[in-house]
Image 1 (tube, protein in one colour):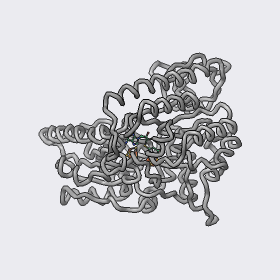
Image 2 (image 1 turned 90 degrees about the vertical axis):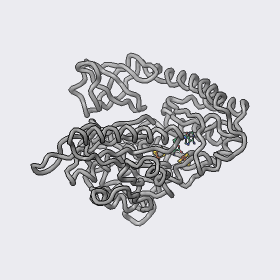
Image 3 (image 1 turned 90 degrees about the horizontal axis):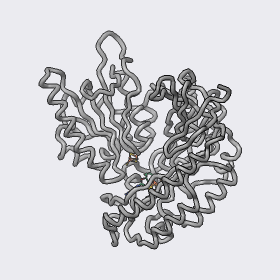
Image 4 (image 1 turned 180 degrees about the horizontal axis):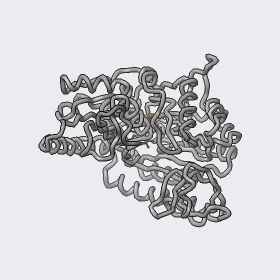
Length: 463
Ligand code: SAH
Ligand code: SF4
Ligand code: F3S
């Protein structure tokens, strides 16, 4: 959930005109990271090359997140900074920088953005990124239009360039958009719309394209990715498990992951795929949000704690040693100390390898925001601290438990020290190895020497 700066490449503009510079700042989930890459793809034919220097940019896009209040408010202060940068540039005699707001804040608060931040030229919702070239042209003529909140996701994907400008060996691939679950605290069903799965042929074509460009690990994305029900070439509906099996056949694609999943959509065939498909990595992000049945009901999660615990048991039976990850919310309206104890107890039973935890944030328009019993900030803070202490302990223990094992590591970037490379273990841990920078893009057995809270250290087997 950290902010990510996307700077895939510089200097791909065609012809002799100097390239125009595109700066994209990405907030929120991996689906936004994917969308930012795709926006760069859409704009590349117009002569835009990405830059990580905002001062150099002709076009700035903030790809925003609306999930918690802080995430949304950040955008307004960021827009203030962008406006100052633009004024400095104009004072230097440079061309006027265009500013766009994309993503879930654009979808949820488009009108408000225009009112509160008049410097914004374009507001574009998540299903309309293929319209960016047209929006840019129109912006040059008339400023201040809000466009593109109401398109169907199918149009977005159909209109995007087939070839992606990926860099590196691990890539995201969105296979599903939207959410029909309506958890009572969550804005996603409102910002991303109804669940929709991309057709299988499109997904396979994009995956083959990625493999051709050297990608070895692909993470399938969707707000509820395990509810995937795309149309197959045979006209039948494919499940995520069927899709994973087909992707595993693509030469070069050695590793497959998917995120995020809902417990109620964790079907038997998907659990079986974890047992049988070697390329499907032993890591699963399966959020539960709370450990109290009463709170789960108020959250409209449509499952209880025991169902989740049993499910975890079945998954662990199918793939022993699988790393389990999750998300937790503390301070949901009405949450008592007793309910919170149930959350701690569930966390102890599951024993997560990694888990995100958040203080409940009331979101306008969601049912929970007007529920009685809103929990005071101080109480939430105390609970979050206690929960995070427990989760940090579990994560550290999981990582330390890898010491002495040999894990296959896919090296995907250089480390901070000369000669060092950093890769990913099957469990999605970062692994630092000295003298390995010649191994980028390769999957190599590494003997793990040490595990700490956030990463592992090891040596190449045989070196
Ligand atoms: N589709 C994913 C989650 C998307 S949002 C899923 O169902 O697992 C990512 C996480 O943000 C959620 O899992 C939840 O833990 C957290 N979150 C969502 N809405 C929130 C809110 N109003 N306040 C605090 N955390 C929230
Ligand atoms: Fe939000 Fe719930 Fe949908 Fe996840 S499943 S995106 S938490 S509504
Ligand atoms: Fe945020 Fe939208 Fe993702 S609200 S978490 S960017 S779907």
